[in-house]
Length: 151
Image (cartoon, rainbow, N blue to C red; front, side, top):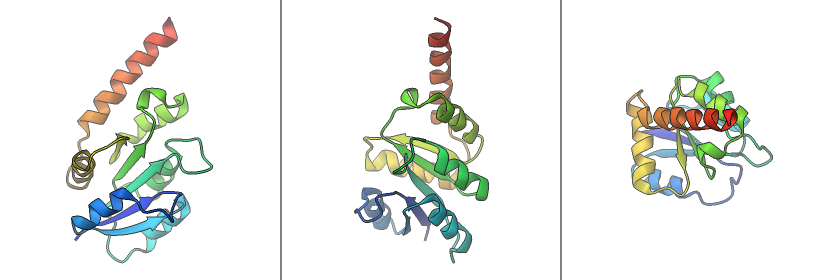
């Protein structure tokens, strides 16, 4: 049985990814803040197999801040960022930070998403360490951003 932490500042709402994970026999823990997620990682009985971060968290404009803090605390734990914004619309600081996070076990899903795409990314993070699709997306967007900056 796998364990996942969902970090979402709207802690009281029903989370659609929680239902998907529950149907696949995951134990799902919820956190409303980055600090709560880090605390769960430190004290969880069974090891945490995946952290899902709804970005940005309420009160933050950053798409990557929570993932960076979690990665610094537990670099061995895979992190799936879920965002409403496509990567090309991220602020430059977040975009560059995401590029640095790609060297770890971090990936991105942009809403709207399907159950299949969600589980595909989740399983890839849990069971492998290659993230070719997000790396290609990052490199393509970086090239496009550089072209715009030069124009």
